[in-house]
Image (tube, rainbow, N blue to C red; front, side):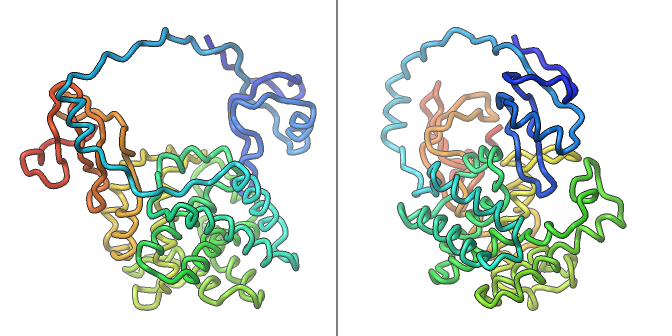
Length: 367
C-alpha cells in the first residue's frame, strides 16, 4: 500500500520518493513525480524557495496476473480478417528527446544568444528526421500525452502535431520545416512575462490575463530581429492566438489576415492546452479535447482542423474499448475521416462494428 504525506523541505532526506512534479516558471518539469530525491534535488528545492513537497512510501498492491481467456474462433477470425495497421506514426527516440529537451531549455533561457537560431534549427532537424524516417503521417496523441515528464512537452507536442498537419496538407518540405520552428518557439515570449503571473496557481485576473496575452507580441519581438528566422515563422508566433472570427489576440484579426502557419499552430496549441493539466484546471480527456476541437469551427481554420482530425490516432489498432451497448471490443482499423469512430470487433459476439460508415451502428459509441 502506498502512503502519501507532506514533508517540509528542511526535513527532506536523500532516498525519499517525491509524489508530485515540480514545475518552473516556464512550465517546464524540473523534478518528475516518482523521482528519488538526492542531495542535489533537495538543495534545488531549497534554492527555489519551495517550502515542502508530497512524499510517498510503499508499493502498490499488485493483483495476481490474470490469464486471458482464449478468444472464440469467430472473434479471432474477424480480428485477423479486418485488422489494418495504423498509418506510420511519429516516434521520438530517447536520444532525440534528450537533445530536444536540452535545446528547448537553452532557447528559453538564452533568447539573446548568437547560438539561438542554430539551436532552433538543430532541434527542428531532429523532429523532421523523426517524421521522415518512417514517412509518418499520423500522431498517436495518447503517446504524446505521456511525454509530460519532459520539460519540452508543450513546445514539442505543438511542433510535432503542426508538422504532421502541414505534411498531410501536402505543404512543401520547407514549409513543414518552418512550421516546426514556429511550433517550438510559439511561446517564447513567456520568458518575458513576470514570474508571479506566469506561475500563479490559480486563474488569472482580467488585468493579469491582459499581461499574459502580451507573450505572443513579446515572442515576435525576440524573433523579428534575428535575420536567420524566416518572417513567416515570426508572424506565426505573433498570430497563433488569433481566431478566424476575430475573437483572438493580440490584434483581433479575422481569417483573411491570419498567416497560414498560425492557422495550423492554433489547432495544435488549443488541443495540447486542453489535454494538459494545470494548477488551476484539470486536463480534458483526449476524446473530449478532440470533440471540443470539432466544435470550434468559428474559431479554428477548417482546413487545418480537418487535417488534424485525419492526422491523430485516438484509439490505436489493438486497443480494447468499451462500447455503449455493453460489449468490449478490439480496434481493428482507424478511419481517417472519423477519428472517434474506428472499426472494432466485439470480443464476445465477434460482431464487426463499422462505427464510421454503418448506419446500423449509428447509436453505438465508445465510452
